[in-house]
Length: 445
Length: 158
Image (cartoon, rainbow over all chains, first blue to last red; front, side):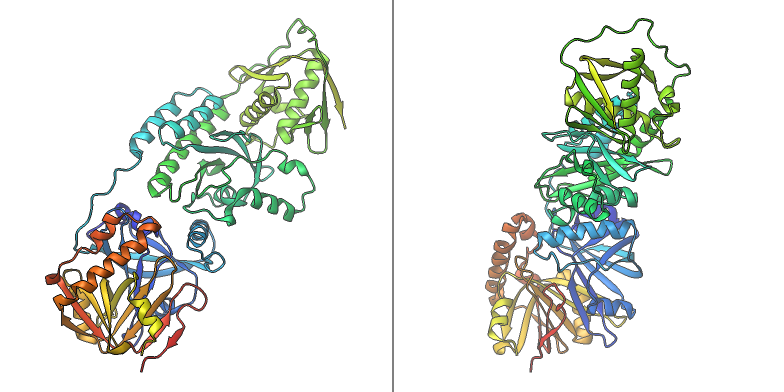
């Protein structure tokens, strides 16, 4: 093999469609265009199986397979000889190709026509460049290795989870030039992903949720696989898919969509990369752009590597943010704040908390806030530790993989966004301080 | 015989590719630099770059069986014309006008779709001394416009 497949992956993006040549038993050739070629590794590609056409008949009858691929960047052409291995109809590769095909279909006016029936996996036997003139490729928008090195160094300088989240999103902007980013954490107990931080949107969307397996983000998390789309497709538009999915699950709980997911209404390129560590899905990094084909294979590689580092760091910070001793209640109760009282209502059924009439948070983060406010109101307590919260029977954390630190960051951010006069701030390792600016009226249902 | 509508379509800014197989049934294909409808639609002439097509031309000479795909990128309208009597002929320099016209039409077709003109012109850069002509009689015509009807025969040439 003269050419390594990984060095010509732009030929697989479908910008200039590839050709596939096969042969029937009588020696008659057949030539067809390829909607999609998916890079698996240097020895394997997958082709989309959409129709039982002559190509497929020939392949299943044992025809050798030849591709003609063309780079839209250089004009270089390559002939590749393939050997059919098998078809996959579910799993990460299938979902990656299905999402990408939906984008290609929408872009080429073929929505409803292109439908992925399977991912046909082939071994690459040889790749040869076709002789002919080429042009110099344009410089890449980013030096991915430099960006990755700098971003990794910045993550290594973080001492806690909040710094890590900020640095991760800042690095995606400053080092990788990605303008629209969301970081979602995985609530393993509830099968949901919740937004913990974002960049590039008018509203942060912190606290918004996506069910596991829904939309690009949910599928990426479920399949533990990056998923990338190069063209706008309504099939993977968030607002609608999330609403439809929740309706289909029969949730009457309107709080599911009380906080809208941020996102570009006209996103043309989207990529979701799972944050994995120790075989767990910790969350998802989601990036998007209004430009077609904004994210390529190199972006995907860089973000997968970045997410791997981020995952290890998140796991580390979640585990070390503990202190041995329970914080003592302050000897002197804090001064009673003046001003109009704030009514805080807690609903035990789902641990949702409302400030006045406005929904703030629910679930574990809601239970934490309610416990903190009760202790504040009854005992004037303002100092809390992770360790204390973890064993607090009122909070009911779901076991060891409780993401307590992430839930505290979520709660802290929701409180700041509401500017309601309740603040939660980190006061030391594994330690938080509560500040209340107004008198509170606590009520529970 | 190709109808007049199909004949006209084949000579617009379509992408053209020709394939032929060897004795081991391995196909080889090359991009067409242009084409000409001959004898009122009974035969087709496809222009190829010899330097890019040595294996393909050997296959054509050995089997005479070819498949040629014509597709308009802006509409995805696609035809595949197969034949079993293909022969390789020298390129007539007088056909350079046809080749240049086809390249210009193809550039006009794909540049609005986002392709860089210099890349397209690199793919189609050719000189008369490196061109060769494959002539054959289409014996079967298939619509390959994407969709459930792709691959259906749309006529059998006489």
